[in-house]
Image (cartoon, rainbow, N blue to C red; front, side, top):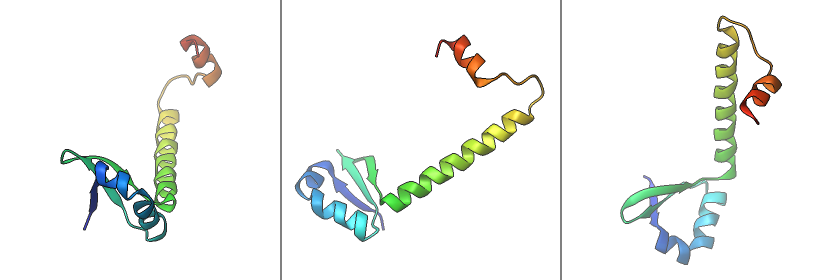
Length: 83
């Protein structure tokens, strides 16, 4: 079951909610006017999401390197883009 809390209620109970997320490993979805707007997750879950994102980025980079054509050094591309 998904724990949902309105933002107004979250303001009143922030410490309690943070403790449930951090130590109870619960996930809490914040709502405003009945719409889900944000989620609170533990640092462990956040770090897992970061690892998944990094893995996806690495796989995308591998695919890009396998594409035909000449590779351009990142520094040259950044310079052309004005970065």
